[in-house]
Image 1 (cartoon, one colour):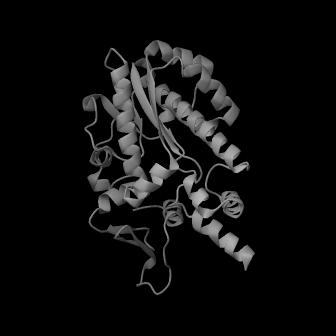
Image 2 (image 1 turned 90 degrees about the vertical axis):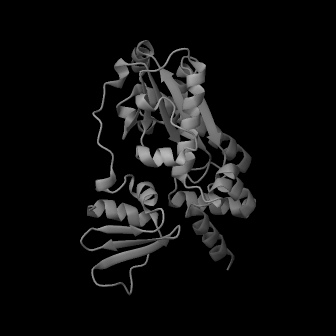
Length: 297
């Protein structure tokens, strides 16, 4: 059972219909070959071949009866940890960047003194300042999924969750190959429950027994917070290149202002160019095309 706020968030993510519905149903949708039904009782039913994974992607968790037992959150900063996080997944423009970083107990104290925290709470100039201090300090792996590759994988049927799982797993592998000791824990900022992550990751989770998944992980592990900052830094730098090439300052995210900027790029350059620097599956694309067509008519 979901609450009204969660249902509102779900309906904003999907194209749905609200007319000519059976009694008690308030919305229904078809997505990725699945049927989604939302009821007045706040019940959501997802039916289809891969319903559990779609539920995890849309809702952030599996149905309650299928969830894995909750783990107690540890004081990760007292241990040597690898943490991983990503940036750009909610932005129409720009790539997706994924970073895993190794932070020893000693380095954890240094990062705290520098003011490392969740990048979502920091302005871009502070992100750049911190990232340029910690990048030389930490063994890390940065993977950048550019827009053409993102769009190619989407066309193959990959969800964002699958892309993230593959990239996080690879980044963690890369960091393990860079360090001479095994970490006490590997902490992943949770974007899917472990079973879904493992299903999508293509390769086994390295050091599975040491791996933990944490929601709002940036506030629980400074290794995740550091990776969050480096990932955001890489995203900012990629966005700077896009802005320079487009000759236009671009707002991050996926709001109405982004639609207007996308429409300007179609007019100044072309739709193909827009597609080369954006994630084509976002609704902003259709909205931008509509804005251009309305202006021309």
